[in-house]
Each structure stands twice: as structure tokens, then as C-alpha cells.
Image 1: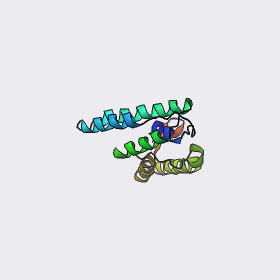
Image 2 (image 1 turned 90 degrees about the vertical axis):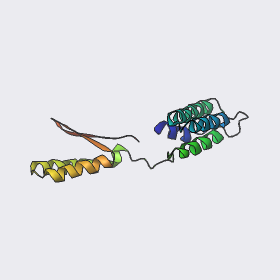
Image 3 (image 1 turned 30 degrees about the horizontal axis):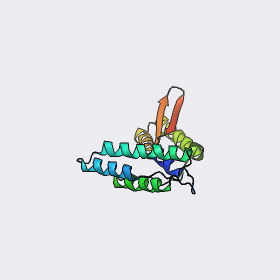
Image 4 (image 1 turned 120 degrees about the vertical axis):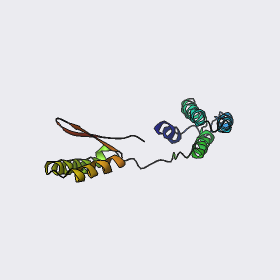
Length: 143
């Protein structure tokens, strides 16, 4: 998802005579979907288009039309490529650390059900916890 979103976030030349034409990608996508909903092949088309959008930008091509096509084709598969407000690790770190401390306190008090509830809720929110001998480490799961 990140690679596809990145292709939508880049800006290409607006006044270029060269334009990345998305027609062949649309045709390949439709062929894949007509082939018994061949989603792996349809996804491959999306990634090919994203790659060529990035190349086109580097070569000074106008990529706006191709970006519109990428967004539309992704939506057919139910993929939302709209930009999200990116919460960075630094933004949420104090809150996650607090919850990890609370979880450790709950475990010390043998309130395992509540400790597991904290862990499960963090997992639902995209935070993966790893209990190690030196403490609990966490990381954000990518989209």
C-alpha cells in the first residue's frame, strides 16, 4: 500500500509534452478482472503503473492522468490510497510507553486478563509488542 500511495504523492511536470498514458494499464487491469477476477494479476498492473509513474516523474513526464487511473483502479479492488494523517512513532511513543508500563503493572499484580486486554487493543491499533528479558519492545505495523 505504501508503494502505491507514494506513487500518488509525487508531482510530475505539469507543462510537459510527454504524458504517461494509462490506457494500456486500464486495458490490462480489465483483462485481469475479466479473467475470473484475477486479482494477483490486477495488483501486478497497479504496481507496474506505480513504478512507471515514478519513472515518468523522474523523466519529466506529466503523470497526473496516470495517478488518477491508479486511484480509480485501486478503488475497484477496494483499496483506499488516500493519504492518511501519518502518526509517527514519536507522536504516539509516550502513550504506548504508558500503556506498556500499565500492562507490566497489571501482570505484576496477576491481573492477566486486563494485561492481555491492553496488549490485544494495542495490536488492533497496529502496535506490535515483543516481551523480552530486558523489557517490552514495540513497533508500528505498516499499512
